Amino acid sequence: MKRFYGYIRVSTQKQGERGVSLQEQKSAIETYARREALDVVEWFEERVTAAKRGRPAFSKMLSKLNNGDAHGFIIHKIDRSTRNLKDWADIGELIEAGRDVRIATDNLDLHTRGGRLTADIQAVVAADFIRNLRDETRKGIMGRLRQGLYPFAAPIGYLDQGPGRLKTFDPERAHLIRAAFELYASGRFSLSQLKAELGQRGLRTRSGRAVSKSQLGRILNNPFYAGQIRVASMSETFAGAHKPLISMTTFNQVKLVLTGRAHSQKQIHDFLFRRLLKCGGCGRTLIGERQKGHVYYRCQDRSCPVTTIREEMADAAFNETFGRIEFSKGEIAEIRSFLPRNDAEWAIQDEVLAKSLKLRMEKCQSRLDRLTNVMLDGVISPDLYAQHQASLTRALINARQKLNGIEAHRGEIQETVEKYLELLESLKVSYESGNRVRKRELITATTSNRLLEGKNLSIELFEPFCGLQKTPDLQKCCLSRDEPRTLARRIYWTVKQEQDEQTAANDNHPEAGSDTQADEAA
Image (cartoon, rainbow, N blue to C red):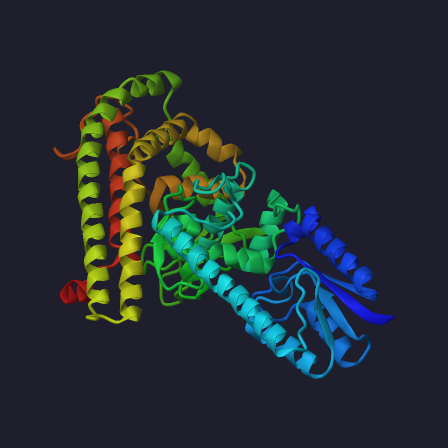
């Protein structure tokens, strides 16, 4: 009885787990072998596509046949053995070498001219089927991408909601992925340090494993988290319709750190006032040093007059300053009563901002359409098109994020105002009881300049704190006619200014640059 191999295959692992197709193929081959009096001595099972070369089980079977370990092999159908013409050519060489190839469902004699011709036609049809399927799949993927949908598995931090639906935040991991971007953007963490920090905070993959360093690098390089969709095999960038996890500004800052173009902060000594105090003479940052059990801060410029201060003295100066701007609970309650009136006034400005953003989005979309037309007309090269298309898409995403976030923007203002009020109510107590990290946070949040002249430490406060010292009168007059005249309005006005300045800074970011060349070409 002739020795034969049996080969069965399905295209995916999921199909193999169901097992129906594999069982049917094996049953058909066994029935054929009994009818033809053939002995199937070994089975080769595969759960991968036949569209590409390099299938392990198929290659192993061909190798054993070349060594003469069996007379031939039996397959269920031609498209089960191969769907690319190179593998079919390898099978043809085996047939030419005298090996017997049988097809269980077709009565074809591959050693005759007519049988080979019929089999060749079936192999060509199978290969063409794969090419057509690939083209249709690409069309479907492009359609989804142009709609702002991501037709692949959701990256970590997001969850799949089914075909044709937007990805949503993963409640278990989204805040940790956001923290990863923010921590790395600060420049204080290497990838290894960030991996350890996120591991301590509990970040795990969906399989429950710790996120590796390479995975973390891919996460930080993925613009999906900032609202963009980029596919490695395509040169085009798409504006995602999903809700971004981080701002484009944060993503761009992370890119600068990853490429080494941002200043990386390396902490050597964890002194309380490290990089916080400056020399009043030359403006340089004071450096800390430990002498006889005490920490001193001195000017690093030896040509400067001797300027030093002990850490305890600087700590007392901040404590005294914060004591002058602390308010009672009754005064804070009276300030809060003014906030709804201010919120209604700023809502009018939000409407104006929304109209401006809509006009900006229309302009970006119009330029994208013109850019596509000039590329199709051959005025600009595909590479130049991809460059300007990505830039315009980023600008469109920025405008869309700001438009969608106007209500959130107002909520951020209210939230920041509440933080200011909490500070005013307990700033001195928080500073006295805070640890080293908390004290540094309070100093950077409330003070702008901290200059040492001789032994005197001059502390300048940010708005609105600088106008609240010594005179906690709620109807206090301000120095400028352009400033609000009540304390509540002064706080609200300060926060709104900060938000507007941040928005302007984002608008002027180089990543959202213009497409002058493309406009000229159009």
